[in-house]
View 1 (cartoon, rainbow, N blue to C red):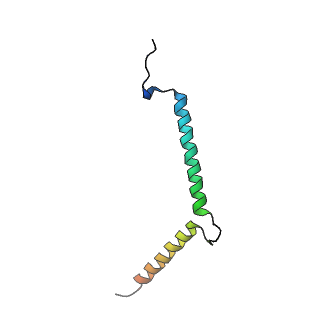
View 2 (tube, rainbow, N blue to C red):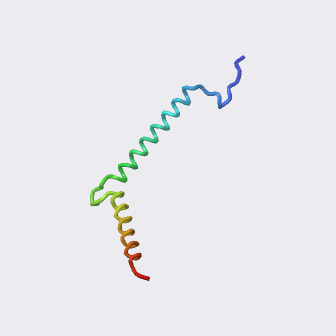
View 3 (spheres, one colour):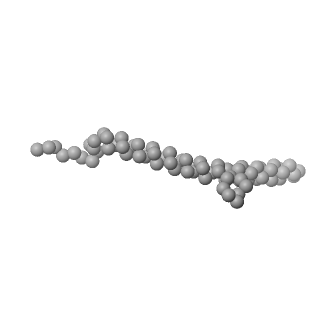
Length: 71
């Protein structure tokens, strides 16, 4: 009679295959996000990152201008 295996005692090859799948999924999702953030799409003159940087610069410019007023 064979001893029963619990779920935590699965074969190591199953875990290795599962870990490889997770790494593959992570790389694919990270690549898609990078393309979406840095690529310029048709009809847009800037990427999402460029728009975000411009928004921060504009906000900082407004903030520093406001601070320059005497009290």
